[in-house]
Length: 175
Image (cartoon, rainbow, N blue to C red; front, side, top):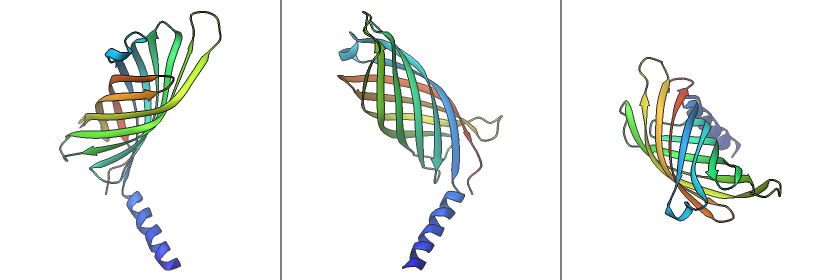
C-alpha cells in the first residue's frame, strides 16, 4: 500500500515538474445587462492571476479582481476571488478557449446618506470564451483576451457582460 502511494505521489510530482506555471495581469470592463441598469452603469478594474497548465489544452487559474462600479452608490466597488478552468481546442499560436469560473464576490459601497460603508458578499459564477496568443518578440509572454457573462449572487443577483485583456508570463517551457 505504501509503495503504491509513493508511486502515485511520484507520478503527480513528475507531471507538475513538466507543467507550466504562469502569472498574469489585466484590465477589465463590465457592462450590466438590461435587468441591472438601474443600479449599475458600468465597471472598470484590474485583475491578477496565478496559473497552472498541466498540458497544452487545460489551464487552471486563481484570480483576484477589483472593479470600480459607476452607480448611485458612492465608492462602489466589487472584489472577486475565484478559480477558473480554461480548455483550449487547438495548439496553434493563437488558441481559442472556453472556460468556467466560480468563487466569491464582495460588494462594498457608501449609501447616498451618511450611514457608513455597507458590504454584501456571495457566490459568483463566470462562463467565458476567449483566446490566448503568443507575443513573438518576448519569450514566454502571451496576450489573453476574454469575454465572460458573470453572475454575482449578492443582496440581489447582478449579471454583467465583462471583457478583459491582459498579459500572461509563463515561467518555463513545458517539457
